[in-house]
Length: 101
Image (cartoon, rainbow, N blue to C red; front, side, top):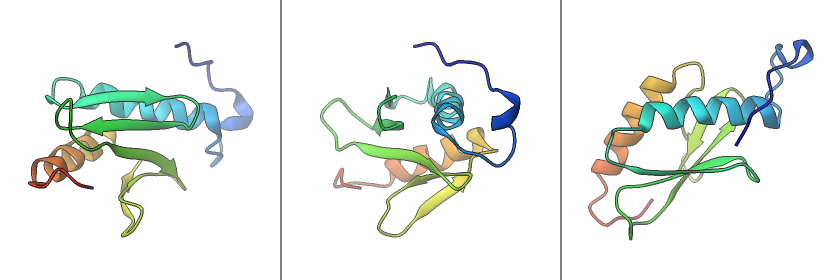
């Protein structure tokens, strides 16, 4: 998938589709090598992350400048820190013995 370069008009606080995809790709890169299974949905846009091939999916989206998962209790991490978000997501998935979000 090719993500177009960011235009000057998207450099403000705009988190349009292209910007969200760019941030999710950065997070995906940070999650590589973690042992997690990661997939990118450009239609949503969101990342699908799971601990195993048969585990429940954790969907991660960009909202208001943050990576957001577990929408019920609004677990989030600043999108300006994909490495920190990757560490938090990895830790979160490791602590789910029932395999549920």
